Length: 435
Image 1 (cartoon, helix red, strand yellow):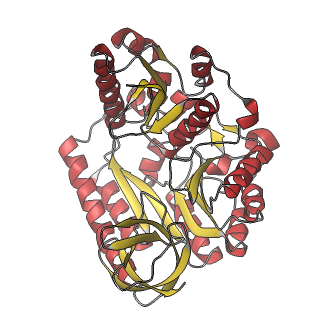
Image 2 (cartoon, helix red, strand yellow):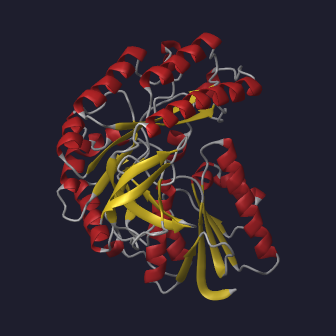
Image 3 (cartoon, rainbow, N blue to C red):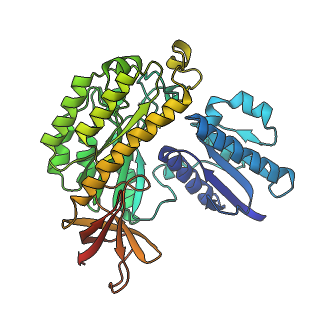
């Protein structure tokens, strides 16, 4: 147990990760040595940043807290603190059920942790973070909360209303990160397209991305978690005209059947969804679309599911994830619908949908053989350099594997031009043609 060492453990999404990175910077400024997600935590203090989104994530968070609570009971840990979404949602219950935790914080009051350690939060460091990602890319959180009222989603119950960060503050953070070697920015929010409505009385995402793109040193900007209703179409021009804005959009569509979209309270129709996808592909040639779909929502019939399968076959998403509905307490669907699709049916539908997508992904990957693309190198893994193109977000998308044997040494975090020589169901294989 090392004195003055704090272990931070982050669970859940990249938005949580940003909070951990900001906390780590404040702790380091106050003289602590900080580790993140260490395989064997070694400090006398541990902070667990929890996720409370869906059942599996909540279970993982509870198990992690209990493991550290046991370490504290066995004298391997002096202090244990918990923050994040699970803590925000179940603060009172957790305090009673796991008394070994010294204090629970919500998602937004983690600055109090510094006070409780006898330290101060330094406002001058508000744009600074300790990156836990490879040093060439970072996640950039532009807002908190969500004003949407999707029937299945607990996020607004946890995070509250949408709150945009001021544009100048975001741009200051980008400049700070560029100075420290960051070239690629994953722009994240619970809902990107609502950015600016509260502060500027308009959808300001296109302006923000254009101003980011104008900052020297910003090589790639990639957009995550957009909402299809009232999409700000001015963004198409920014994506088309700015070479450092990746032709990539992560837009969760959830379903296509009008009946299911209405029951999910998505405020968009089947026709509008198809029209938006068509507009993306017309306005931003070459764009790669990533989406997330849901099966087994209450009331989903075989007809609804057939419609969803047809949608996936017809649209041919470049990237697609899917999950089975799980009821979350307090949500509209938990209060108003019966969870009437049996679990085995949900899993069958999920497998069937992903099998369709696997075939599409293999065909789209094979179509890239012979093409050249700009690639950034993330890491070395065994006999390969592992890189990504502008169409690939870290952690979730395919990668490009480049054999090291007989190859001049490539630098992590640098860009090269690769020719695609082979494809499997998801990943691509390439060779460098320009250094």
